[in-house]
Amino acid sequence: MTIDVSVVVPVMDEQDNVEILLNEIVTALEGEAFEVLFVDDLSRDRTVEVLMEAKLATPQLRVLCHKENCGQSTAVRTGVLNARGDLVVVLDGDGQNDPADIPALLKTFRRDDQPANLGMVGGLRQGRQDSLNKKLTSKFGNAIRRKLLKDRTTDAGCGLKVLTRQAFLEIPHFDHMHRYMSALMLREGYEVDFIPVNHRAREHGRSKYGFLDRALVSLSDIFGVMWLRRRARRPSGVDEV
Image (cartoon, rainbow, N blue to C red; front, side, top):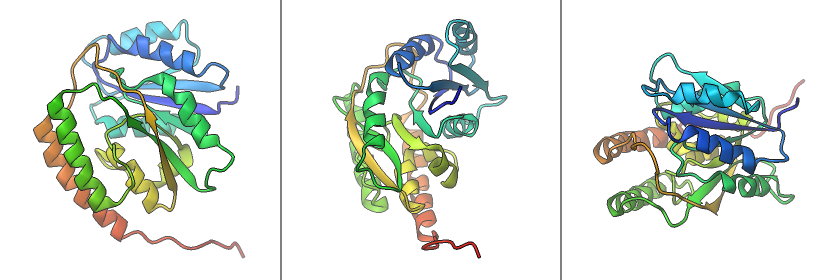
């Protein structure tokens, strides 16, 4: 069967979330030719076992397992590399992104008046269900990042987005690059767009990120992305002769 949409979900230690999330994705994409790729980044709980059991009832499901822990960005890349669809939906595996928003993202991407070089439509979380400290630090970090990178997004931390597989494969890959996709897309000459999406409280498990480690890494990453953007060179066109 031809696959039009591939959904990529990076996970680690999400045994209580994955089956619920999978069922929501399947419901949201009813009528689409789709597949769902859960990429396990060396979970220490029963995440893989739960997914393997779910495969019996969900033929659209594929389960990819890293042999060593490589981080969320690499898990996303593993999923995209193995995706069969030209359009790729990416969302977090903790259940805070709402799969019910996927049809709206796809509709926005497929609209008749979209730019010819549209590479990504990202989500902007509304009514964030996070702690006050997390929301304030995120707002502060997004303001700094947007001022330095000029990437048009006010919510770089939203994991829900739809993009073309080709565009993703053209952008540089590095650890934590999933937070800089809009800047990297713009670097390669693609357009980006954003729409409001729902945000839910985490029901099970714990966040894999702490404030201090994220802040220290983000500062280094921002300067790295700034360097990448300064060094970008693209031809205005290519002729085969």
